[in-house]
Image (cartoon, rainbow, N blue to C red):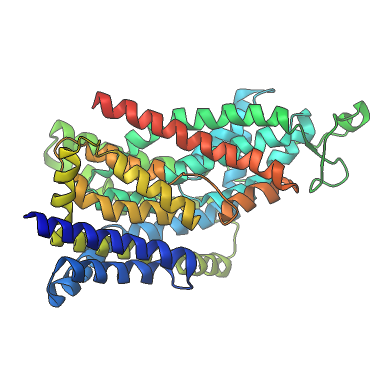
Length: 458
């Protein structure tokens, strides 16, 4: 590709990204339409024929959703059962009992780490927040410590681990093995979550607040009196599902997917390979998880209520599906235009680590849009054609760079910022920023450091 065409590609990409930024932050245009418009404009500027632009958009949109659309639908169906069955609360109580008194924030962090894989982090936080306040009430610990530990862990796996929709789309964009990516993302999520836990302990000392004994929606700045501590509320498990069935819908699909990855790695053949390939396929594995959730967790919920919940969840999934498909369309246009190869060559010549590109784009989009999913999907769709043209960059780390970058920095136009702070009971903006801005900054900074270390190793 000559210098003129390379310049044309760069201009097309820059204008496309700039317009997406503008549409998402300054206009009423939805991110789905913004990405489709950006795809068309990028194709026109780089000189693709009209029919090839439209063909690339169709191929990218359909190809992406053909692989992950069903899994997204299954995932939100499983999540809504978790929300209404009490399974999340049962998981939390299980870890509290297992770890013992004095480690309540660790128990809530572990719970958040697992629950956010099938359940959106904002919904999960609202579900588990009453338990955080109850633990603070019973132990005298700062509710900020317990709630922040929960909120950070929820955000980490929501941002990094499939089958959460964002990371699932990243797997598709970069053509990764989902089992291997789940394993790597789970391992990397551990140190990032630990950093969030440590920050939660620190900020809890700075904001040493507890729920008012008479009204848990109000926070107080003093220690409880002996009389108030004597009026503790027992953690009730009445009406909650059993321990095994609460964990099974999450754990079993992950195990099945990982078994399929292992079977492929060791070259397993014959009937065992056929069976494992079938039940370990992501669609089948997550489908099995949904069935376990339906018959194991939703038994006490009326049939009409379950169907209604599923219909609502599928409507909510529609937005995710369309945005994911639009990301695939943008990526295909950039791939067909030769933008990936051109920019990859420039990065190599300039000696710029390719791993920085997806991280920075996701990070910036997270800041301006307030959405981790928008940042992740847009960064993945733009950078996948570039990274896959660079032999020096591990595509798994590039995918993780999109996910970690999407943690970004929280702000007042981030819905989760308000969910965490308001549900916890904070009212002062200074306290809100100290609690949650600092927490998210800690997560993204730790994630970046882990990413850089792994990039040097691999």
